[in-house]
Image (cartoon, rainbow, N blue to C red; front, side):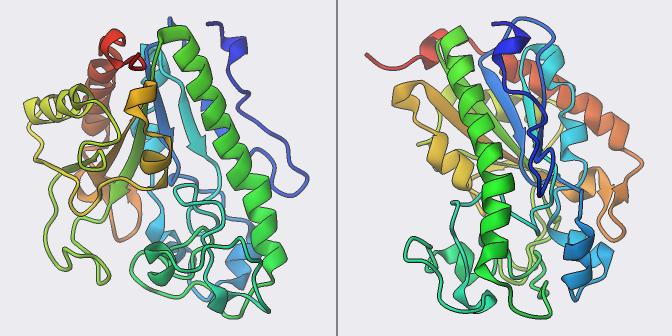
Length: 302
């Protein structure tokens, strides 16, 4: 596959330009696609003004610098898809219309999913709170604002991911989506591991249903060989991307990687930590190992 077969990194919208970026492979394609849906850090001025939170608090849900840690993916034959806008503005790792009725003026359309656990926790497609539970908005929003964000940012991102999956599967016989995230070092007030120290890495494969075992095993072995502590699926088994796109029987595999933020950043002021470059080097090793997985056993079952 040539670079021209992949979706462009910039999709122009009159409301929110360039809602995502795609860094394209510089060599023959591997079966892997790396995604970073929560590292977006372009906070629209009107959004910041409408928030009751200060700029640092507003970044509490952001997977800061994850796109930088996995920036070497194209060097190993894998595209890197990253969001431009932050999770607090619109969350790419949700269904399109997971919305909290209490956030909006008037009734919501019938197609809105207002009863999911994510919505109940305040973390729907348009979040009510940041990850520590602090309320984002000082007043209710019109539904038209949610619709603008979803149609102008969320949908182009997922259209690009679908194109990448189709193109990669056509070229290699399968597609392996590695959905890259970071997590607070200690479980938050709304988490099942509230107040507890977390492992360095949590791998989410929907308890073995979203990808072939070799994908999760390869990732776990590679992390452990580098000295990281690794657990699977608890408290993060994989979000919408992992659940929605993972169809191993059809040759599409998804694995979520959650990195402990204390490894590479200062969680208080959201700055790169002293070990950032070392961790970035380790991620190059992880990327290489995953991109070396033999695609043949991952192809659709016939």
